[in-house]
Amino acid sequence: MKNTIKMIIVLTVLGLLSGAALVFIYRYASPLIAQNQKDETEKAIYKIFPEGKNYDTRIIGEDSVYKVKDKNGKLLGYAFPASGNGYQGQIDMLVGIQPDLATLAGIEVLDSQETPGLGQEITTEKFENQFKGLKVSPSISYVKNQKPQNPNEIEAITGATVSSKAVVTILNERIAKIKKDLNK
Amino acid sequence: MIKDFIKGLWRENPILVQVLGMCPTLAVSTKAVFGFSMGLATTFVLISSSVTVALIKKLVPHEVRIATFTVIIATFVTCADYFLKANFYSISKALGPYVPLIVVNCIILGRAEVFASKQNVARSFLDALGMGCGFTLVLIVLGSIRELLGSGTIFNYAILGKGFEHWVVMALPAGAFITLGFLVGLFNWINQKWQR
Image 1 (spheres, rainbow over the protein chains, first blue to last red):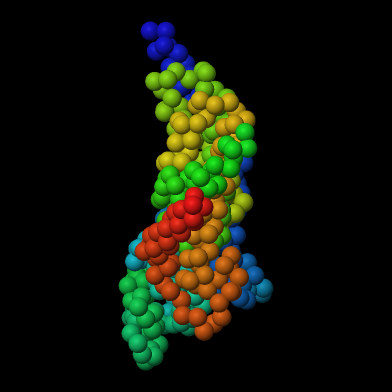
Image 2 (cartoon, one colour):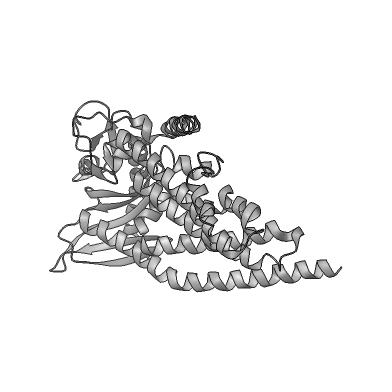
């Protein structure tokens, strides 16, 4: 009986101490983590829109849309996050589209767990640059092992068709939704 | 006393001899820098929890010792995870779920149960430091070999020229098993030579 009480006391005190330690570290770290995530998004926005000087955040439903403007306040386009399933895990991207909602300004892959050396090539400039000036209507599609013929096509990465296709699918779904949201 | 530290580096190396902590060993050794950061995070948790366990060992009833160790380890792991996320965001993203998974790393619970819960604070500290360093060193070696053959670099410095065809398999899980197999083989071969 005495031992039971001792066990309860030890575990309770330990739980309290551990909880207190976690509260402390959480309060220290969470503003820094939020800042890191904001910096990452901001860096991606200005990479897609090199002339961008500032942006407004608009929240539609659960999604954020960033209206990016140049130094004279002229609207350069919209940037928005897009994520979905890749070959091995989730792919997170930031997508930029011109104000006419018909031409992509570019994409930036923020996070992905694709196969190193194959699917992970979606994070390279060479792949991402294909999306600059790409037409989104009727929808983005991909071709294999040849140069794209149409303004809405990209060339899939050799040996990583699934990853390339995943990027295209995520973009198409997200763009269709963003068009609806922005026209509301 | 010094033996407590040295044994973790070679004679009782956690990866090569005890074959513990295989999940992070195989998963995050794709690059030297990931192996290094994973090793440091694990060493931090190992030292903190071993010292804490050694400090409070007399207060903890035998029946609930494993639960106590787990709570202590989990607290330190969460601290390490938040610290990395706050200060080394890109490394934390690359290590992904493997930082929280340090909680289930058998090396840490193993050292707490086998060593720290029976020894004094100073010896537990040296034991944890030795085990942590042994773990980190093997992760760096493993990561360097895989990074060199898989992408031609070590710690992101280009070593092999542009003409080198990357061995993609080395960056994949299969490469981890192959490299670790060769490392353990080499380790045993050296040990045999020494004993003669």
